[in-house]
Image 1: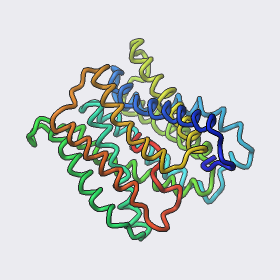
Image 2 (image 1 turned 120 degrees about the vertical axis):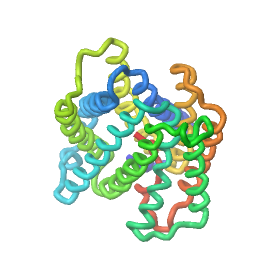
Image 3 (image 1 turned 180 degrees about the horizontal axis):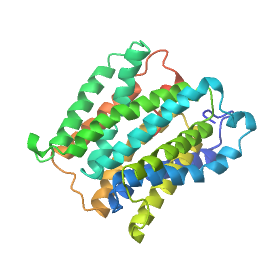
Length: 310
């Protein structure tokens, strides 16, 4: 479902772009739901994957039996992908307990930078010269965002956690590239979500987190994270990718952190001005440059075309 079999008509393309906008909107709410929930970030992450895995069971089961089967050659990638996904999602949501939604989203979008570096180091793929200015610009942008008030003392622990988490999310994308060459997107995501749920729920209990008994607003926020951001965002993005060129989806995806910053300002009263605003613009420019700087033989599934952070 990654490439159209025939040129779509104008009405179908319009529908695809509208659904892509829905997907960007859904992922843009990820940090908003987490910040709105009066619960530990680990709990929000746990319910997010648990709810989404249940909702995506239907699309998974509607596939042919062959597409649902987990082959021996893909099992290790599914396990590794599930581990990196669960770890990244947990760290991202826990970091949101100590930083703003806008900061976390912009800094988290550095993942394509790390994907490119992993490609160079692991796959030994030469990268075009434009990639390196993108790295420098993106890193300066992240630094400006973390400075916040303009002093090193203003850097928040959550910002640092999200910065390092972007490398974990990049590792997940690299693992996804290998697995997606062997299985469908629906099967990959369903298996990852189910295994992540089977990992996070016991860990939450082991760490002493309370999983139930939260107020109505918090419960709705956690349901929204699973239904809207995880399940809804995934389905919308994959529908769009079946009808729109991956490069265009990638460019459109850079609007996600901008949307999150706007929503955070309107709904959560967060301030994203001064150095943070400059830094956010630089991060987006860096991500755009690194996303465009594809190696000559970069596998298609490795090209950034989905959400650049959890």
